[in-house]
Image 1 (tube, rainbow, N blue to C red):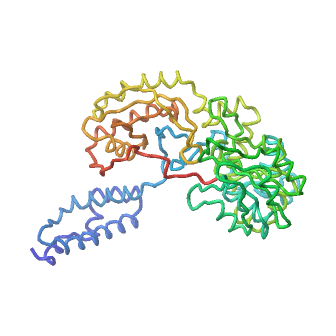
Image 2 (cartoon, rainbow, N blue to C red):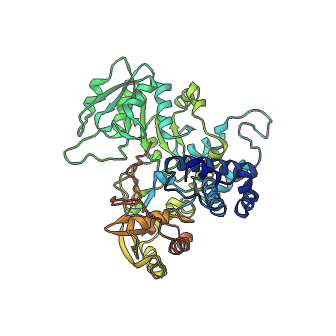
Image 3 (cartoon, rainbow, N blue to C red):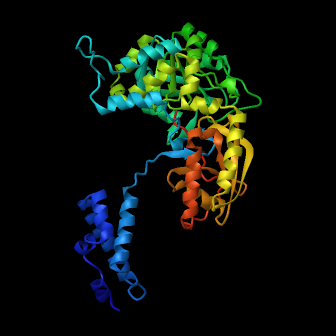
Length: 488
């Protein structure tokens, strides 16, 4: 049959809109969306017919309507969805890093629904500063004189360098010239800020004398950077912050300490060593301390600077401060999170990241043993075995911080492990695990207890749906955070 004859067999958009599947869809979405979807689908069909005129059969109107309805429903699903993180990576960049506390969510909800006193002092009726809701809390928790908040720690670093060291040299240890991800390289940030890099020492060893010899009339600051995504081990040496501070005061130079992930909780209690805390840097005398809000702090994405009032004021006065400022939702979530830290026992109970990290191993084992038979009963699973394994605090930012964990190792009935992983990722709710040694692991260290039955639900959905024909994959991990290096 010729292509024009095939075209005559294609129903009109009007006819399709009158079919039951699309009439029903109009009520769910809108007439405009369904009509545009049908029109686009028919355009694609005509192009396909032109390419394969002798081997293509035009579907019936009922089949076309069903296909169009499925395509429209699929396109209406938001790409940003809630996910059950069963990867075992607690601060997973691809999965949004730290979940927020209920108090933070409630606070965001309040200011999102109505107008909010972002820059209005309700007592006086005069204009206020938008950071007034968080700066007293940050000062109280870290011991700093003052604080400011921007949209992430890369922004905090850029603003600090631009405001305090533009056209001057910044001295950094060669072993701390980090590259993190998303085009973030410390030398490039220094250049973008207008400052000039003066690197000292070697990759593995930097001494106080290296800083002393590098200081000249062009020096603007001494910068220390926490190397959160790598470690230099073996024959190494670095200058302690206290000694760097003494040198800075002796030479009249500010010391900026970029501690990265921003832990207010002492993570050494759960076996994670070497994560610096902002309050310790302030106590050691650092003039300015920079850190993230959405990593170890467990709050919203933000970059936080705390330190001497004069330096914070200088940063606030820079034009970049407005360009990088945060909105009312971030401020509400951050303030609510910080309020929890005033009582550390409350923080451990209510901040999701701390809940996951401090969950006893025996608790995870009991959950794994209880869930395994339920998952094994699903038709898509040949076997489900509780296994002890290792989870990670982060992927890019803290890749070496391991946490003991318990997982459920799934052996698929028919699919390969990577195929089962894909089908779970596209189920409702989406469950993201990791493929390891020919099994799909559901790591409970990064799963909240309230989500256990959601995993069962998703696996049952997978069992009742036909195999999706997942794409070939030889990766050792269904979803790895190694491709999502952290931005500080």
